Image (cartoon, rainbow, N blue to C red; front, side, top):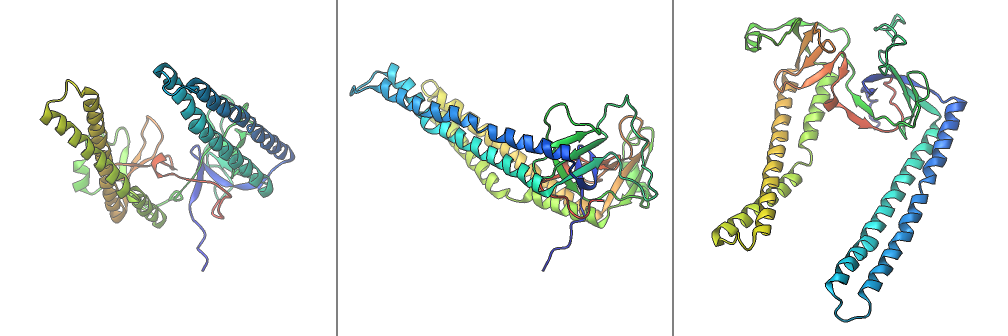
Amino acid sequence: MTEPPSTNVRWCLGLQSIGVRALTADETATLRRHARAVLGRLLRLLVLLVASPVMLLGSVLLVGDGLQPSWQRMIPAAFLLVAGGFFLPAAALLVARDVLRAWRAVRSDLRAGTIEQFRAAPPADDGETTTPPPTAEDARVHSIDVVPWSRQVLLLNGAPPERPLTAEVYESAPPPGKVALYSLPTAIAEQLPETAAGDGRIDRRRLTPNETVELATLARRMRRGSWAPLAIQAWIAVIGTAGVAGLIKNDDWATRWPSGILFTILLASGIIGLRRMVHRWGLSRVIDEDRKDAWVLVLHGQSKGPSPIEVLPRSLLLWSSAASPSAWRMTSVRGRPTKSST
């Protein structure tokens, strides 16, 4: 059974995707040069591969053939052993993994032969844009073209960037478009602070079905996998508490103060981690309430910043700003655009 096509909209730097086009010859040549440059990074492995055995040899020479080498020799020998035997090989594996992953991504872009276009405003049904075209003095990003796999930016405001750039591509529920707006009930309006509307007005609208599904997904993501980190933070807090309690009971602070500092740090870290996990769990429950209510507040006519601004009424999280989704809603994606791109 095939899954229905995604109805999400793709975004990059706050700009909405308007679809894909074929790569030009110059853009293909740029990607090929980038692929060769990525493989050139493998030369860094030579430094790591040479440094690792040199450090191991230095460790052996420092220890020598003595049965009881002095600590002046043991400390640098142990450092060279750990660095040459563990850290440098691990760094070499990470470099090789990143280089091969980046090279495969560029090759996938070359095979696909397409690039995704992001614009400040998608064309309306009548073919006109919803915002006026930017002027020459406008330094803001109003258009960006990104290849889907390596996320390389090939065009920025219609011109190639001065230096290599990458950009994250995200997905969210599509903007609601023209929907019905409702005035706030008296009970809700009376609870808002007097300065909430600023120099504009506050309405509310219904969340679309796609936005409701997105809220449910975001709430589940906040709770997903939270039990293991919660258990780890609780265990750290228990160890810190037991250590501090033991030192206080035995009055060993004078002789074991380094252990006391360590246990205090563990205790503070565990408490902070537990507080963060509990807050995340509680926020997910409030977002569930926003999903069940299926309302969002709409603030119009704000002179400072973009307008309109949409806010979830219970969690008070920013939902969108000038029809662009807020950052916390974004789900990073990699690969070819879905068929929902307009």
